[in-house]
Image 1 (spheres, rainbow, N blue to C red):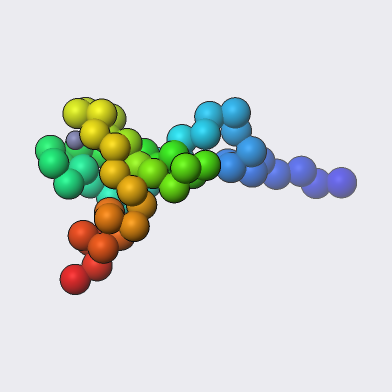
Image 2: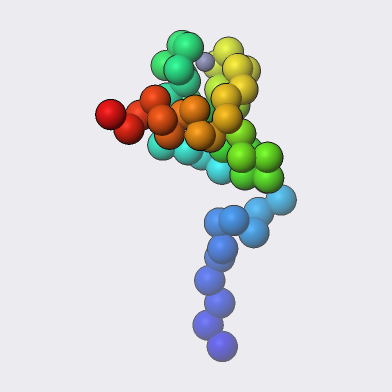
Amino acid sequence: MAEFENPYASEDPFVRAHFDCLDCGGKLWEYAIQRQMVCEDCREVFSSEDVFDAHVC
Ligand SMILES: [Zn+2]
């Protein structure tokens, strides 16, 4: 039986999001469990909804 890796099955709850920090422009990581995103540079935490809203014009 063929097996494949599920990237979401990792122990790491953070998923790299394709968004930039609203404050410093750093890379955001999505904390999927709480539907929040955290910046890897300034550690600012945003709600996913706020980030989506800011990037959809
Ligand atoms: Zn930041």
